[in-house]
Image 1 (cartoon, rainbow, N blue to C red):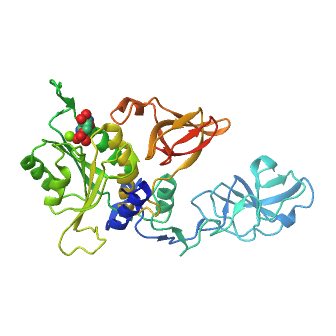
Image 2 (image 1 turned 45 degrees about the vertical axis):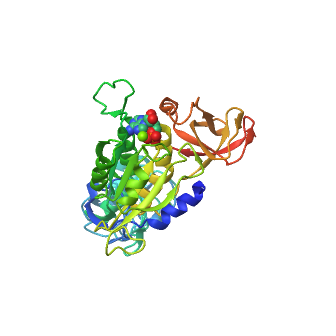
Image 3 (image 1 turned 120 degrees about the horizontal axis):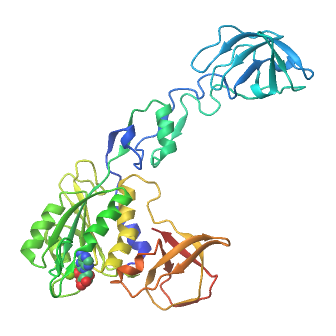
Length: 412
Ligand code: AMP
Ligand code: MG
């Protein structure tokens, strides 16, 4: 049986980023850049004032109270009409281009006007470059400002806007079908009869997909019956990814692995040494003209995950395996789950030979990152995740932890 880390490697071997698409800048929040972006201009594009005040020559200021002749005024969006000579000043506003001859701006609070056309500089000296920024200081024309693989947040969008990128080349969001399987399931809107439960996994997985950057396509419920399952698998295989929930264990009606293989999906692994989620299944449907690794924009392949039906298993397997696939499809450079180290807030006896992902509450305490384990009654206990914002990771061997010991944590 594969370890979690081996399973993650196996997934990454099968997944390549999706084809780039052009996207309106305003719609690209959270997407990943498909190509590097170079600046088409210097920023700032001209030497500019950082304060409202007077543009002057610093060498003119030798003692407090120096008076200068005001020769011009320039506001943001205008350009100076003349240079500043020795003994002169130009009244200037924040963001306006500085006149030739100037090497400093004295802020208005440090001056007083004398009559209508003179200004008194109150300070005894002024430093060259004070209160101004030179052309190209923050970014140069031709410079690579954003690398491929960068996730677009507000600050990246602002940089792209500054560079005039109304359209950006990004990785498209994978479309991901969600198919819940199980004769016990009824839609969320129905009241379960004897032996039945609501299909909560579909809603949960769709939310996880959206949160991870995919587009969820819920397909509803497939019965534990070969013909019915087969039809819905065919629908799901039209997408970049098909997630099935349930039907991957060793029960009599766990038909998912055999029906996937019958549909031509090549099994990459079945079962991982992980708790919860041991029965997890992963495979790839390769269509004709597909290269070995090849997911591409023509949707020649479909990645298929069979997630165990118990909700916490589904949730954890999604966070470990499916999210990693989505991040790679979306072009992230570092697709695997990121861990941070946190102190256990209490003692804990870990007694398992499977790597365990334990629902937990992470917080930044006064002593640094801290983690508290939830009360957890196993893989069916969805309520254990309600106050959790992380999973604490325990190794594939028994360990007794004291409060304050460090453990790895993956944030949800
Ligand atoms: P399975 O993996 O199909 O053996 O399912 C294991 C258990 O998970 C079932 O007995 C249900 O209690 C639960 N389960 C399966 N599918 C779902 C679902 N879509 N929503 C909520 N719980 C589910
Ligand atoms: Mg089932």
